[in-house]
Amino acid sequence: MKKQTTETPRVEEGKVIAERLNGYAAFVGCWALIGAYLTTGQIIPGVV
Image (cartoon, rainbow, N blue to C red; front, top):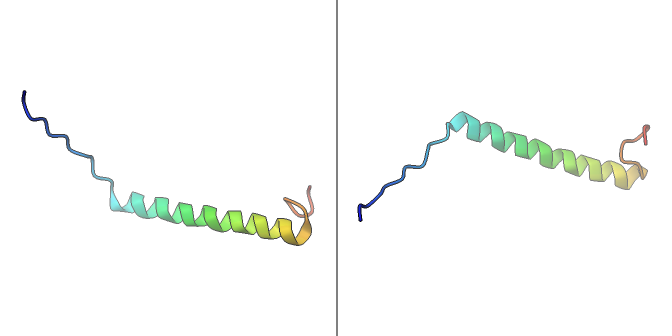
């Protein structure tokens, strides 16, 4: 049986940074949503 080698594709560094920033922004947004709900009792203050 032949030995097979598989190469994992490399991801561009810029894409990794962009995804990490997107994750941070989502995390901050979730905390903002929780904070708004705890302080006002509404999910979207002024709307719901």
